[in-house]
Length: 118
Image (cartoon, rainbow, N blue to C red; front, side, top):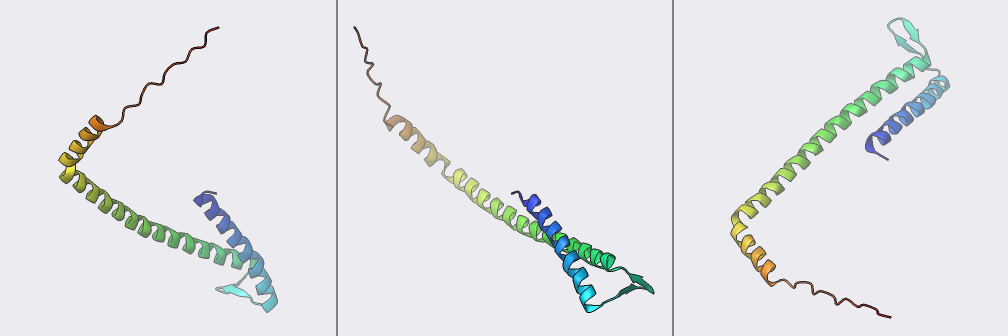
């Protein structure tokens, strides 16, 4: 499963569980939510709070991914620069090693062809 598909399924599961458990909890504890002087229905109260929580989770996920993405990118830059410096310093040695390997390597022998005559 891809990352974004898993994320969407997790968000939907969170919204569903928050809705089901939240409405049950509000009815069990007989809690009324007021905004100003107006009574808010339990479904609206839970849906608003669930959407706010999901929004905060998505924002936190974006921040975490950007920080770790930045760290991984910087690490790759450091490893790449060290590799380029190593190739830049040792390129004559690598060129000589490659030439010697091309000259000395075992060449494949031609297999004899067998022909069947009747």
